[in-house]
Amino acid sequence: MDIKDIELVFEGDGLTKYGLFPLLTWFLMDVLELEKRCKIVTVKRKRNRDKTRDIKRRKTLFPAPKMCVGIVVVILLGIKRFERIRNVLHTETKIANMIGLKRFFDPVTVRNFINEFQLWHLRQLDRVNTDLLKDFGESFRQDFPVLDIDMTTHSLESKKREGAIPGYNKKNKGKPCYQWSVGFIREEIISQALSNGNTHCSTKFEGIVEDVREKLDTTNFILRVDGGYLSAETLNYIVKNDLQVTITCQFNYILAQKENEIDFSKWFDHNEYTRLLDAGEVYVVSKCKHKFRVILVEQKQEKTEIDDGKKHKTKEIKKYAIVARLNAPSDPSAIYEFHHQRQTIENFFNEVKNPFNAGKMPSQKFRGNEAYLHLVTLAYNCFGIFKKTICQRSGRENLLVQLRVS
Image (cartoon, rainbow, N blue to C red; front, side):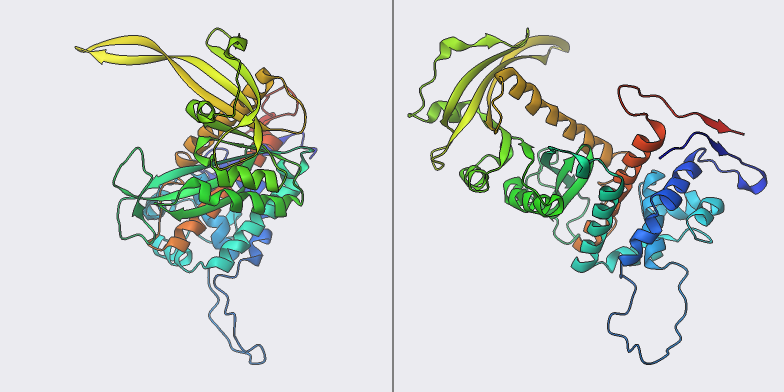
């Protein structure tokens, strides 16, 4: 897009406390055409109505496409809970007008809308997100995409929420939770799945991979996952489908395989904190009879301990392995650096949970919360495209486009 200058003019009752947010609103409506894309969402439409009869119905102020756009805008404005919409946005009529609304909806309206979502409506939202990425994203333009997959836990306040079960919740043990699996390429969410709190991440691995394969229409990509996904079933699935992958593995798993012959005299320093050893093609787990390239890692880490109110820093050695299956031959250091680029997914989860409030589940229904996360995904991807298109220039430069505000 060739956009040279953008001028924002505020005058009279057009003032807003959200500063440059009208610029983002213009980008959503006129450039991305988000409302037009959301017209495929059929939440409020009568599926089995008699089209031969001319029945006059009351025209709603908030049809489904406008509701979807409105919720995306609410998420981008950083409003944590729908209950705060009335207090925060009751004077923001100009922003509401920019997205085609006379005013912003009240909390009851948006909650009822979210609760009406079913599985086919979620597929419609996923199609909106996929079409958006095809037209404006980077994930569909990669010659060799790298797919990062991970799962995060959403702790919930109440057990009354459908599907909220105490499960794999390390930070808040015993609390009911959901598990949210996400696959993303180039910092764009391309696939996701919400599941009950007692769902293990490895059970969603194949579903995410197959979904991405169907959307990209190719298997020419590399997977990067952490050790939670390591299992014989996962490794056999990778070999069967001829996929490329790097995955974290426990150090002892490699040592436990009696068939492996590893020369431990070949350690070399990667940097002052890390040593690497190229173990070559070896077995990983006993139930998988396929060999994988394995890089053993020893890493010095500082650990802070508190004793008598005083902090003491000690160094401990962390040992683990990186299991790789790559078509191109790679240097051990290159595999190590490539795999550790997936740590950006942790930054993604921190960002999506805080500024985008993905952890604030608004509904008692499972499908309603799943719909909310789909809209959070849409908001996140739209904002990412906005930053790459308007706020940043390509290449190594990271310069703001000139904005004249008068």
